Image 1 (cartoon, rainbow, N blue to C red):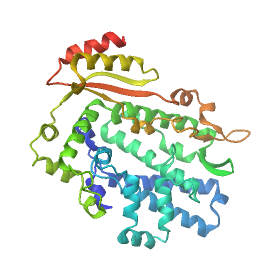
Image 2: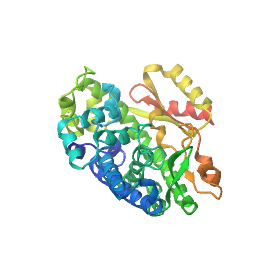
Image 3: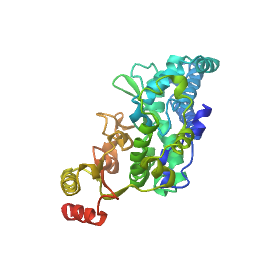
Length: 373
């Protein structure tokens, strides 16, 4: 757990938002607190859904343990590390929870290790579907509820805030398809809209910010130089020795353009065009092709970051949604909110970058403006 103090929650976002220095450790504590509030609210409103008092107490401990440990599998700079080493953080989490010291800590909380892991990785066979949604669900998880407020605070993005008090107060459990599902009552629809809007705005303003994305591209190159062998950190013991600060220290020993760019905040790439929340990819494809024809493939980078689309609202995972209490039973949130329906579905977020040292940036931007106007 203490290693999470040395992993920034937002990776390189501090290069665009100077105060975004908060850690995954503080987020883990925040998610635990948010999830505890949510559980207590659900227990008050749906007491029969959690069994007798002993079963309810077990599930409360289980939820808190899972939320506290949900990020332990992340490596230095998270997704960039996963790309270079090829091991997702979910697998790392499984390996770490299997360690004797972690297993003993979980046992001391009087919960089952496999139950904790099932909630963290979102096991569809978990016997606790409501808790699974609170830990790793697609929409109303405590993880997301905390990091949106935390990230908005430390980046100074006011539009990333939402009415968490009302949202938690409106939480309910419904039976959908014979299984318990997490949702809200109708009084919480406005709070849910603020939550969805906050997610949308944080993606546009922070998670997909062009400066952050540019330096993450450079970081990917630098990590490949630090770990030329992609199996270098396969062993859990070696993986645990690395954090953000050790990576940054190693950059001081590497005399390459990527390492120098990260040390000194040198902007290797320039933004030529961006296409935010577009549903038509043709303008992007035209600009991408024109830039490559003019400047060559090696001097153009198209950033799509499809793995971050989970931060967008509903509809990207098949039937994933939030259920709202209706007069005839729970209904899809998109049926009771025009705003949520509008923001749902698949949208494309793309950026086109060019290398500053090899390209006339003004010309690249003119080419894109003429094609996308």
